[in-house]
Image (cartoon, rainbow, N blue to C red; front, side, top):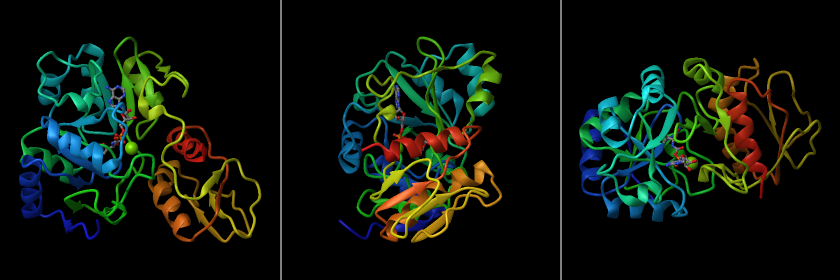
Length: 314
Ligand code: TXA
Ligand code: MG
């Protein structure tokens, strides 16, 4: 399929997108992290179409997006810790995995048969307007074919994935939300747009780290993910002429076919925002390998390194 319609996210376009969602169609929309591929979370058919479009394994559950805390509380059981995290970080790049309420109106496939549900309120005016206009929770994974690089611009959404793409410009954060479960102890399931240390400060205790890739607590922890076409080589200190170079700050790699510096001033937030577009650009340049320098494992660096590690695992 080709030629998916991309439209600027005007009020009229948002209203049209909401009508499509209510009719069971798939709409790609901007969030502050990455573009999501939205479907009516209460519709078995829409959610089945979503898994089908992405080629997503049925065991990998989806994040349910809502516009307000009260809507989230209707779907999941919030204890004090969950409420404090939600009040502090929502709208924002934190996804909470909580015990699903009995009778929550969510298609069974959304949670892949688990008794928990992942929830977040996105911090983007278009996403919030769309959620309000649709008047229902939206299941929304990143709007990319399963296992590939997430889109951070409307034009990065693969053609044919969505019935409509709402263009809200480039995503501010550029890397997916941090996923934390409070079910059975507080654990970090996926590093992301909100720094683990910030969450730990608010919780007043440390987050445990999720299990290894062999026995993932969260299917998003599977080893190979976020992968460009080119192979990714980590901790590079030199580069050859047929390789692409992904560099950071003062750590440049001379002599590559193409070099992209994620942030010349060494800012990890800027680097996160540029990461996926850089992987795409290096792929488009036709490099066989992407040689990435070591990124500091602090702040958003933890999420960048997580994505680069998974992108390198094949
Ligand atoms: O920033 C984001 O989170 C973006 C935007 C669109 O909101 N969405 C996103 O969705 O990254 P996705 O589907 O690409 O990643 C969702 C992650 C996966 O790692 C999935 O396994 C995990 O959340 N997840 C969802 N429900 C879960 C559950 N009940 N228990 C454990 N992990 C869950
Ligand atoms: Mg994804």
